[in-house]
Image (cartoon, rainbow, N blue to C red; front, side, top):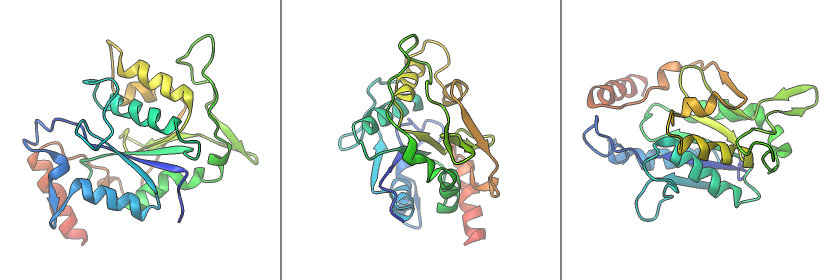
Length: 219
């Protein structure tokens, strides 16, 4: 399926302190997590993919040391330069059980609605206001932003200028810079996954081993 209107975004800029090693380089059957996620996006039909990582040849943060929201802001900034990009799928580097079915669940309901998304200017009164939050296809309202219950990532976002402004405001805030803080300020749908056990982050070696055990079981 051609999804050239979707930008795939891999968040791979964390310092991996609890893991003790670069999570992007962790391997499953000889394939690094970075390569595994790139392959996942290829399976989903995404033709444009960026890796947010403060290393040469990757998309660096515009605002450094701002955590994952700094990376999301940079990805939205990149997407705004490309007219064909109507939405972004954002995934973390450390979710080894993530698969194509879960990604498809996030975006399939919005496939038709994406054609209606446009790059509208933020409100003149408040540049951080989400001035267009819902589009309508037929008689069904489509929420442009969505994630699974109990986890902010993976995340689908429309390529919208007001989200770019808001992401920068959250990333550079002196208060809460979390993705959850960002989502609390936009109209965002939380959906139920039929396989919540696959939406597991691996932040340390014990969690990584548990994920590997699950992969062995379902393989």
